[in-house]
Structure formats: C-alpha cells, structure tokens
Image (cartoon, rainbow, N blue to C red):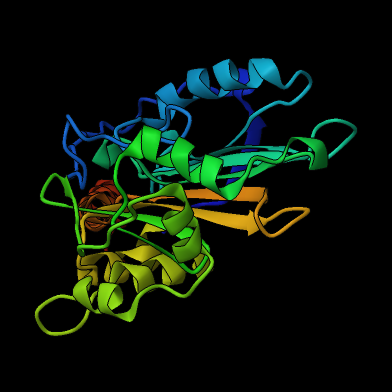
Length: 285
C-alpha cells in the first residue's frame, strides 16, 4: 500500500506535493474532547504536521537530541506525509535514556496520531518509589481501570474511563496490586458480552505488531474499548523503586475508522490514476 519510506530530520521536511487533491475526512475518535489523554502533549487528536512543534518543545531539555520523521507517499502520487515521528536519547552520563514515538494515519484520515509510546528511564540515584510513580500517573490520568502485572491500565469507552470496580484505597494497596497478576475478575469484566475483546489482550497484540494501520485494524475492531493508556513500571535498584516506565496510548476506535478511510482513499486514487492513463491505439489487423 505504501511506497518506500524516507527518514529525514524535521527541519528538512519538504512541502507536500499538490498534484493530487486529497479531501481529508476526520476519523472517529476513541477519546472525547473533555477526556483527551496524552503522553507529553501527544494525543490521538494531534496531526502529523503539528507534532513537530511538540517534539521540539519537549527536546529543549535534551540538548543535541533531534527528532526524526518518516514520510510516506500517498499511493502512487507525489503527495508525502508524516507517518512516524520519534526521538531516541540513549543512556549516557547523567541521562538514563529516553525515547518517544508516534504513528500517524494518512492525510485522507486527517493524518492523526493513533499510537504513541514513550520509554522513560531513571538514574539509580533518582529512582522514584512505585507509590510515588503511581501517584504521578493518577494525578495526570485519574483513577485507573485496573492495576496489575506491573502495569497501570486505563481503558476508555463511550467517553469515560471503564470501571471494573477495582479499589485502591491507599498507595500501599496500589503497589501491592502492581506487584501481583491482574485480578482475573477484572480481566473477565473487560471482555464483551460474548467473552471476547479484552483490551488487555489487544494491548499485548498491538505491542507485538508492526504498528501500521492495516496490521492493527482487525484487533481494533474487535477491542471491547475505544482506546487505552497503559504504563508499564519496571523494578529499579530495589523492588519498591522504578527503574523504567513505558507509556502507551492507543486509539482503537480511530485506528478502525482511519484504516477504512485510508483504504478507500488509496483505492480511489489508484482508480483515478488508471483512468487517467492514456489508452493505446488499436493495431491494424
């Protein structure tokens, strides 16, 4: 579906070609306007063309680190767009290492972010406690759907954070839950009426996928939630400390919607291109 990708720095991104007119259609979104979770400012409402400013603002605190953008061509046209944007800051000296990446749909579906991930390391002498980390997470995202398997889960549906009636009365109880397997009752409660579609499973499948829209679309359609935020907390120098935190944002509803919009648009562009191909003359017989 896509042509060869080109990786360039943000400063060198060329303007999109105008030979083919694209009529953007905004995909359905899994998060409401009032409940729009983000990872350092990157939400599923961000367009690829506007993400560069967010990356550059964040990277002011990481001198020498430059963001990279991967561009795709729209079908057989000369129109290019940002499909991936990322930066990687390896561990060195006083910096423990950090990365951030975002995946975007094509201009046909408004070039929206649908998958955002961040990996954040902590120096040995600056590792927060797990209780403190959970407190930071809940201060930003609110009460989680569930905690377990080393992760804090937020699943969204119909403009709200889903509830499976898990209660974490104290920081200590939240840490206890974090250090144990996810409550089986909570996992079952996340399934649909037919016992399928758990977003815990969909998260694992998405993490193992290559993250392109076609690869994620089927699971996104089957997911029993519209989107999610998950934070994976790894042990630090001691079991009560955090060595690394991995943040993931996935908009399943937008993935399913954008995949259809993009597929239809690519097919329409291909048909238009074929229709414009000059026809050869019939030979004399």
